[in-house]
Amino acid sequence: MTSRSLLLTLAAGLALGVFQPARAQPVDQNQVPTTSLVQSVPAETGLADPTLAFAKDAWVAMIRGAKTSVDAAEFYVTNRPGSALEPVLAELEKAGARGVKVRFLLSAKMLDQDPASVARIRNIPGAEVRSFDLAGVSRGILHAKYFVVDGREAALGSQNFDWRALEQIHELGVRTTDPRIVTRLTELFALDWAFAGSRKLPDLPGRSVPVLRPDTELVASPPFLTPKDIRPAIDALVELIGQARQSVRVQLLTYSPIAGQDRFWPVLDDALRAAAVRGVHVRLMVSDWVLGGRALPHLKALTLIPNLEVRVVSIPEAKEGHIPFARTVHSKYLVVDGMHLALGTSNWEESYFTDSRNIELIFRDSPLAAQAVRIHDRLWNSSYAFPLDPAKVYEKRKVD
Image (cartoon, rainbow, N blue to C red; front, side, top):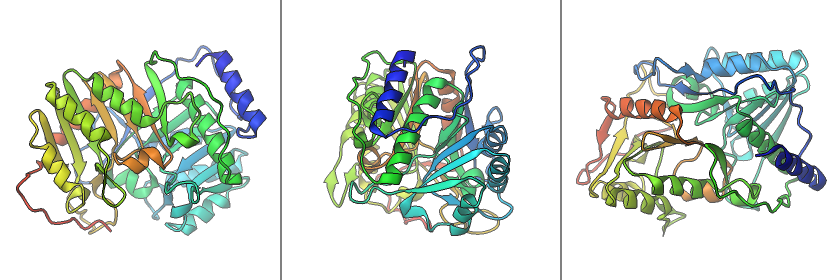
């Protein structure tokens, strides 16, 4: 985005009452933007990539460095005393105490997950918490997971603001100072913050999307709550898969071409099948949460297509015993030809792209893609992943 188009974007938003003025720190023109992957892995698995930082450490460092603002949009918050999220919440409290403005956006449908932690954030000096509720607009939710510090640095990925996401689940995210990402996230946060306050959908400026794709791009869902010059995420993912010539690697919590009660939604299914038919080697890896689900027959059908493999990841229980909604793979990313990476917050099901707020980041010709390949292959070849057998009857895994 050029400086002129950015100014026009903010001016239009202010005129419509959608955006609030950013409280960003002045950008150091001499500082080279950095973007790195940050990981989370289930304890006791040995799945950590030794070259990558952990999200729990990156989050603490980012908030500790906050000078003016922390703007967070999260699906929910859940803490456990002594867990990896405790230092993050403690840094938020310290930030508020030194005058940093904390704004926290949470999905209305998930506020009851941990009322004590929500109250703890509300009690931070100067903090404000709003609930994001799409009831009456769509069946969707706030499913994005990101925060922006001082308008200059952001974290986004599959990690929920949940202690389990930092120590008991396989997750992948990004920490970045790239203004192309940070500016867009700041814009989206302002839009969603205003919507959460008014419950009125904004009039979105009608700007066109450039035909030439930048090497770094933010795409988002749902279309009805996204500025017109941000591409719908589903279009970007299908385009990337369509450009594949050698390989496609996907890792997800869940994958389903079934929408609603019984409607077939073939958009991503068709893209993967078409890639395999033209000779691209497709590897789709999902969690064992799919076992016993409605999408399982469709996943089994994919395994019958030449060049298309499906593996299911099953993480054993922790030594401490069963942890609800944990011990799984929750990362959401796509790697094409080992060169292009799409990483974000959407499971591959229709509602995540049409009804809910989600965000994906696309990195073309990026070294991040090679890192994601390494992460995918490490898990794909591990003892936790097994090929999906189209003839086998699987028992449904206990999740809660």
